Length: 373
Image 1 (cartoon, rainbow, N blue to C red):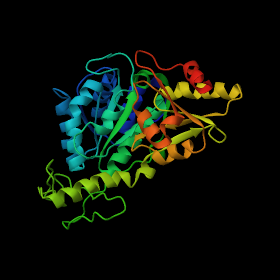
Image 2: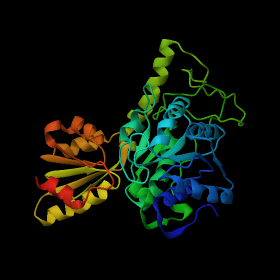
Image 3: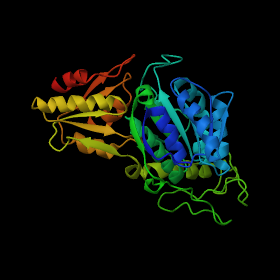
């Protein structure tokens, strides 16, 4: 039985693995690293039960290359890592962007840089997820805040990856990855699973369709398949002329940018009358919600804008909130990353930053003090 329907009490890493399997993931390649190892361990047990394959690679470079290969063999694939391993993966994440290989990368974030704090939490890889690969490229990154969202957002990551033929990243912080709470795996019929749009004929793909995403031809399906990191034409054949490069890279960016409102979603809580907004994501948004509730009990008109998708950045939603409030509080477990995107959209003068770098998540009281000030 592929989908283990039911209600469970387990940690976020396990919910992530089950979300992948429910999405149809049948290949996992990875290398053990705290705090993401439980995902690999669970996939090693579960994939053989559903006819899939698990392989522990020699390092994270090979892991990322392996899931790209599996994707081009027509299989939904995933890897999981943390900061140091993610740093090793970014070159091949760029290859996945260039070859338009749908795949999912889970980064359970810890404190960095370098080895940092392997068993503690952090949100320090946010900008790396977007800007890690060299060159112009766009990816998708989701930020779960609960065990249930670890399941749900992993399913969504696979769906978005298949829809836009792009690597999708689940950016979970260690607190969410190791948090234990109830989550529900629904019946298969209630899961909306996006299957791959496959190539049906030998003619050149039409790149002018609304999503700017061509159907995918995979190895073994009867087509001549070219997959190269070089600039290439619509058939995948190397073509490094200036105009060919412009056409290709522009389309790779535009297929995400032009669909950003479809991809990026947020949750607005108590925002109807809010004059102060807290913008947060991941585990910090749990503390932020409690802080907002306490603020409202004190008579303050506070609200929460929870960012479920970090990349593409939900610019329009943040802009709408910024136009209706006098102040925005941004608590982050870093020295200021999403902060800069909020400042860019809302204006520096409106934004109050509440950083925390270390072992612990913000407390509701710390955020409440920032809302009060």
